[in-house]
Amino acid sequence: MPRDFSQLLRQHHVQVTAQRLAVLRAVAKRPHATADVVAEQVRGEIGAISRQAVYRPGLCRYLFLWNR
Image 1 (cartoon, rainbow, N blue to C red):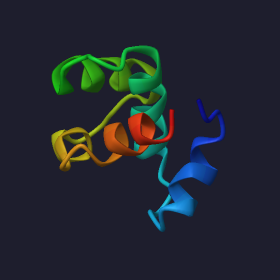
Image 2: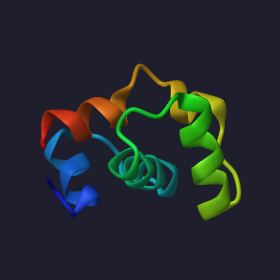
Image 3: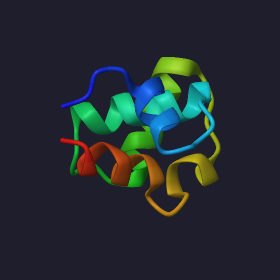
Image 4: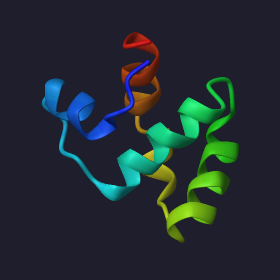
């Protein structure tokens, strides 16, 4: 399982943002969590996240699971 999530995003030509990194960390901890649970966990970590950042066609979840 990848630990350097910023490198993972770059490998897939995805811009690295604090929100994406926080979503990846949240999904790594709970891979079957709902988007609402992920958003709640991310808000606890970085303070704010848009729903779009979590719901965006599962991009972060896909990258995380694909690279396990």
